[in-house]
Image (cartoon, rainbow, N blue to C red; front, side):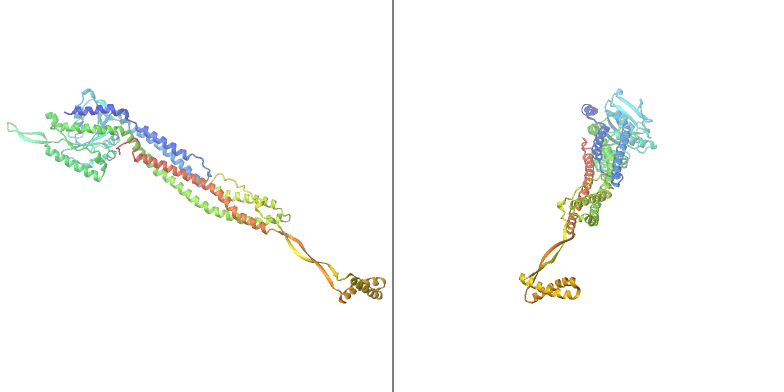
Length: 577
């Protein structure tokens, strides 16, 4: 019998694989710790948001969601450790799951393999109330299912067969126990009876294990037939013989074809780990001790090969369990819960940025309008003294107050702190007050062509006027008459041939103060500078939001890198689904 080949392969496991094994929880904790560090490093960065604002509450919710996820993962890791109790107990052993329906011959098969080892190397156990209980008797064999719970046998220091309840056991408990402990195994021996081989629907209950690419060896059991003959006395006798090589080959090819069809329909990945079916008869070996005819030599060779594949799987099983947990628990919850919430925050940021652009334009127009209403009053206040410096001082005070008030009303709902605007208009930027003036042309006096003619005219006129005045009013009348007469005489003399000139001059009179150029320069200043002030304040807030958006993108990159690492087997895993 080729059992030495089988034992040699077990020794390779002892010397080469055990030292390299890693525990799933260690790998999970390592990845979880790194993920926690990277994500909370970003989320914990200070934010200048108004704590009562909608966006700040969304960030708080995002942070809370992530904390809940890590707490939930910690609970699930504890559950995983409980589920791995059997695997941890036998972590230094290769574990084959003996799987099949009722009456598939699992107990007979397990007892046969046990007989290959020295009796002191065989330790049988069963599971009772969640505890491992040692038993001394061989597993019961019979025509009806005798395995109602998980039972196993330790063979040597590094091999274990786990005999599960049949898939079609009458008690519901059997199926639950199988499902609970099957994950700890390293390879699957699928026992299918020769009477109805290849019922591939049985494999549906192994779908999860097959998806992990555990090696699968189909074994057609009880490959024998009942013959009848007569003894020397003519009595009818019945006896079993091995099925012919032709019959066995036909059944093996049929089972292989069924498995191929199953893989095409359900899970093509099992083709890479599927071994060719073999036929055996433990009964015939016990009857005749012919291991070759009973197919057991071939079985041991195939199991040796399976051991090698199981050893490779064993080396990576902890990593695979970690990958399964990271993918099915952590990654799926990150994508379903955290990334969905993160998307909501991103949409809110984009919407807020669009709204800020519109608000900036509205606030700019509001401030410009209100300042244009205030300016005439301020100009009137300082126009009389033409005090431009005082005007500029008042303008600065009013403008900064209005700017900070409007910005606070709008941006204060979003951020907790707004940088105050203290930009100052300088006097040089504003035109000067100017005087309002009018030009007046006025006479400076009358000028004659010669002095004598003037005096003569005056003397003659005075004499005449005096005579007239005397007649009317005595001495006073004489004096007044002389004056009037002088004027008349002067005029008369002019008309008598002398020229009279009137000398004039243009005089500029200040009639008020002009603020036209002041108003125009202020209008220009408001048109140019107020949009800049508003945009500057809004740009600071928008840049802050863009920083948060960049943080969100970085968070997504962390999750995507985590996903890429898992989906591309970058957890020191090779060739394991």
